[in-house]
Amino acid sequence: MSACSWNAQDQERPNTRTVSDNERIIQLESIVSHLEHQLDQLNGVVRELHTQIELLEQSQQQFADRLETLAEEPEERDPQQERPPHY
Image (cartoon, rainbow, N blue to C red; front, side, top):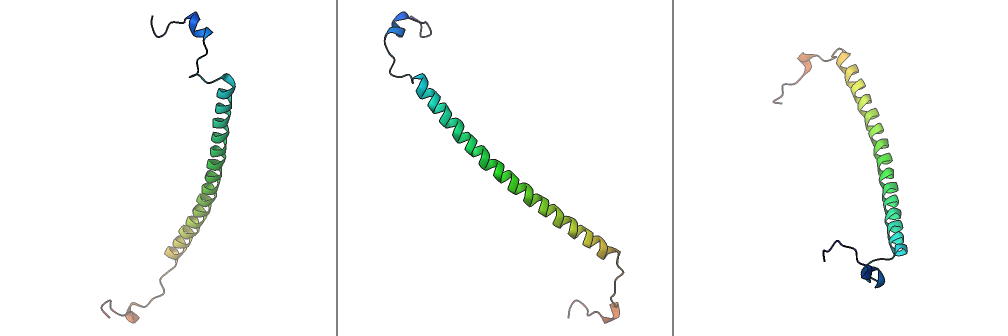
């Protein structure tokens, strides 16, 4: 007899190794509930990271704007008044 064949005797005797349908549904519901909780937590992390990225982008843009402004301004230093680097 092959391991894959169905036998009427298998149906008559209860298989203690199998989980009942209700137990299996309960297990699956528990897994789904756990996964939903993890998904909610991950969504919260994604929202926080998105907010941080937006703040960093704003800050970077402010620095870039300031750097551009500084690059356009003429230098107001007198090379004669500067000390040499070895002092």
